Image (cartoon, rainbow, N blue to C red; front, side):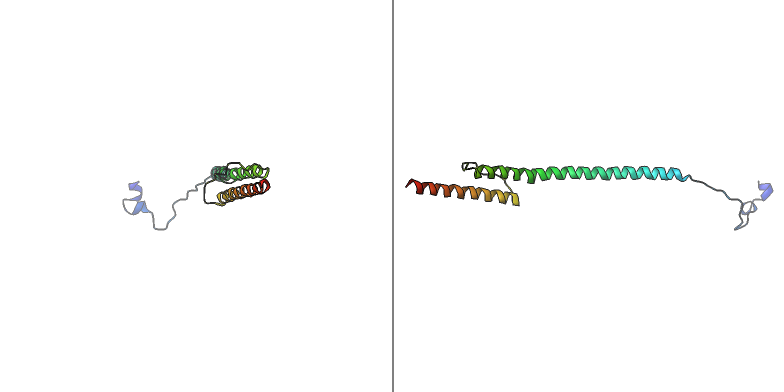
Amino acid sequence: MIELYGEEHGFGWKLNEIIGAQVVSVPLSLTIARAQKEIFIFMGIVAANYVMIGIIMNLLLNVFVVKPVKEMSEYATEVSMGSLDTPELNIKGKDEISSLSMSFNRMQRSLKSAVAMIDDDNNK
């Protein structure tokens, strides 16, 4: 090679001279298949997160809203049927549900005292 081209200047190549060209081909189908697989995995993770958040929200809603409201409904039904000796509701917190339970308890005490006054008036 040195005898043919010499020792200087890159074997006799000149600046900006095209010696050869090479074509590189990358199959697009592999890239698309990989992208589709990644999108499928990503969408599966997003869907799983939504399902998990939905389940957690459902459980929290059931514990903090539905269960106390059912309890108050049963309590109100018992009191409305005349069972004034029903134990008071014991729902702790500083939210609307606990405020409503305190109102129910106050209503039961008022109703109980009103019935007691009526009974006292009837016994005289």
